[in-house]
Length: 112
Image (cartoon, rainbow, N blue to C red; front, side, top):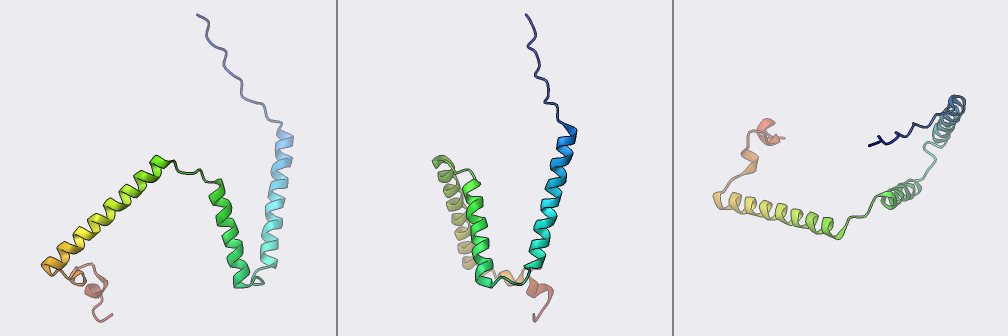
C-alpha cells in the first residue's frame, strides 16, 4: 500500500504579504481618522440608522437556524418559563419575600 502524498502548504510571497498588510494598516488608520473627524456630527437618528444597517448586515451573514434548531430553542424557552412560573407559584404560596434574601440590595443597603 502506497502512502498518500501530503499536500504541501501554499508558499506565501513574503514581499506581497508585507505590502498587503501595510495597505491594510493604512486603510485602518484612514478609517479611524475619518471617524475622529466626524465624531459628534451625526444626529441621533443618523447614528441609529447606521447601527440598524450594521445589525441587518450581521444578520445576513449569520447562518439561518434549521427548523429543528428553532423548535428545540422554543422548547427550551418554554421549559425555562414554566420553571419560572413554578418558582413564582411556590414563592407566593409560602409568602417568600425575595427582598429579605441576604444578597438582595435592600438587605445589603437598607433604605436604598
